[in-house]
Amino acid sequence: MAFRLKWSDQALNDLLNIKSYITSQFGDRIWLKFLVKLSRYLILVSNKPDSFQLAPDNIEIRKCTVSNRCAIYFKVEKDEVRIITLFDLRQDPEKHKKILEE
Image (cartoon, rainbow, N blue to C red):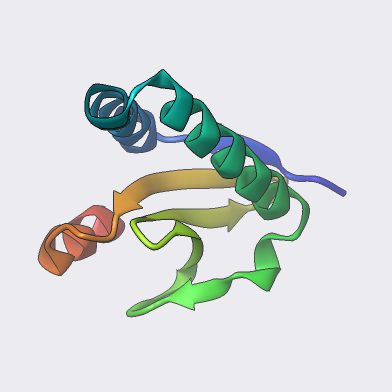
């Protein structure tokens, strides 16, 4: 059974920021490649959310590493998976902790 994906406002904002960065630095072709890769991982998260590792310091949140620069943080809630954030792994880890605590 696939879980329905529900995006938080934070995650949607993160996606827009990632799109803006990738398209301005590398162009639309690279953005589309990233989007295809992200979509594949979202399908995996939807189908088997429990197969991903737990986030450090929070046993309710799981982490799916999309690339060496981006990870999806999500939480399983009844019949849906809530995407909390798409986190740029190059950012300050303290910012990461604050987002996950909200």
